[in-house]
Structure formats: structure tokens, C-alpha cells
Image 1 (spheres, rainbow, N blue to C red):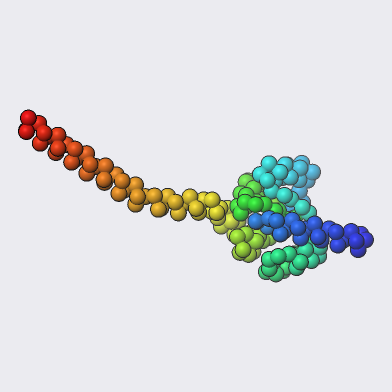
Image 2 (cartoon, rainbow, N blue to C red):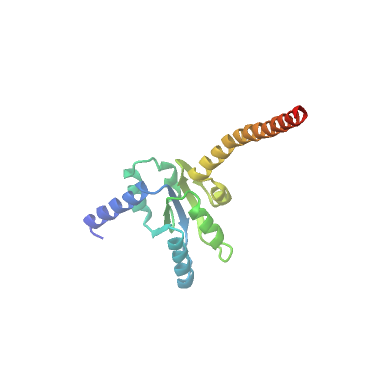
Length: 173
């Protein structure tokens, strides 16, 4: 590969990394053609970009990226596939689902929500991460609960008062 091609490829990978909310590094080596094709289709369907990359090029791209990915450098060994997504847990869910039928992919590590996670044993943790939208929904629900209780109590008291007024007006008549 010519130097110009390497620089161009590094710039492309850097751009991908900079524009993704979730970066997963996995090992899919050993997939047969059918498994590879199926996994790529699942990635596409779940809006996860899958790229097989050379470790040296990925490291250079990460060094040039906007965030600090240095904690991921030690896992850049052996076969490496880069999974990029704007959903923090979509790649983790995809890996977990695919592993019901296969031993791979193996999660090497991830950079999600400005946090580095290393090791395949962290897959369940990554699947359980809540998206920003889910966290906002939880906060809104928590804030609405006391308001709903107050409104309910006021309605209940209002109905009691209406009943008392009705009784008084009947007695007065």
C-alpha cells in the first residue's frame, strides 16, 4: 500500500471514529463465508458499521482522533474488526444475539459514552447501558410521579368538596 493510500485510509478511519458515539473492537476471525455475510447483514440492519482494519492503521487513526482512546491500544492485537454506531448498546446487543449461534464475535473492548471498557466479560454490562433518551425518559417519569400524585389528591379533594356542597344545597332546599 502506498503512503498516500495509508494516509487517506487513516483519515477515513479517524473520521468514522470521530463521528460515532460507540466504538467496539471485536474479533470475528474464523467466521466462514456464511457467518461473515450474516453478521455483516445484521450489522447493516442494526445501523452498525463493521470494518475489518489493520491494528497499526486503527491506532494511528485513534491517535489523531478528537478523544483519548489510549486505553484501547493494548487490545489492538490479532484480528480486529471495528464496529461503529450512534447507539451505545446496539453493537453489544448484536454481538450477544449472534453468540447464541456462534462462539464469535469476541468483544475485545469498547469506547462508549466517554468510557473505556475492556474484555469480553463486560458484554452484559454494555448491553444494559441506557441511551441518553432512556435516561431522559427515566428522569421525566421520576419528575412526573410527584406531580401526578398532587393532581390526583387535588381531584380527590375536589370531588369530596363537591359532594359536601351538593349535600348542603339539598338540605338547604
